[in-house]
Image (cartoon, rainbow, N blue to C red; front, top):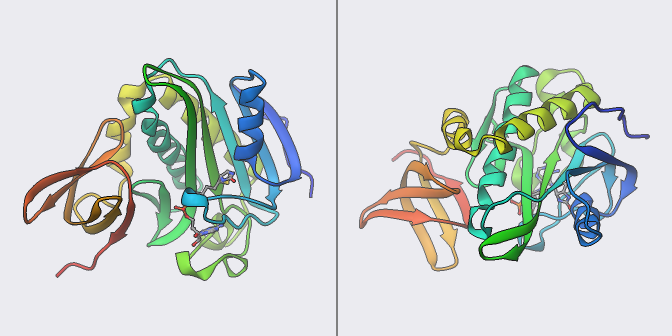
Length: 245
Ligand code: BT5
């Protein structure tokens, strides 16, 4: 299927039908010096999640990557993952879907995965050269065609009717642009839409598991967990929401 475009977005659009990975394409464009480009695909044949995991990307989804060159140190790049999560969550809620953000990079509906985000970057410690924020949005896809381990869902499944991908994408990009233009607005918006805060969590980090109550998010994207040994700030890892005990 052809990708719907003609977007009036604050980005140049690089549209594709089928492509291996919009993130890979955006990285190539970055190497060519491009900036403020959004790579958009109807289908990905080699979509990737974190840690090189596969991201299943059939026709009908919104698979996109935003390439930008913000004037920030490398260490601040995770805030763009949060901004993307807020942007998609806002768009989903406008479309009538009760989307909530799960730290660090998922958007869920009732615990089911609607969106995954993958941010990649390159540059020097004091300034990024580029950031690529990949958003995998299960728009008009059948959850039965997605891997069951993540308990996936889609906008169409939740609404009982398809979304207009052009309109939805436009809303996501506008929201993302507003957030990146006002970085101070990202954390408050994230807190407002989070499902992780207040929950008992277990985060698998490189230094082992951290378990406790997720109490806050800290700039640029770390989770503060209240454990038996006091507060621990976790910058990266896989997070499970535990049942209340
Ligand atoms: C993510 O990874 O959630 C980040 C996914 C980012 C995908 C976008 S699509 C546009 C851009 N181009 C790319 O190549 N990537 C980005 P992670 O947290 O590691 O979750 C990956 C896991 O989610 C997999 O191991 C599966 O269990 C599950 N999964 C795979 N495809 C899925 C889908 N479409 N919906 C829900 N869950 C899925």
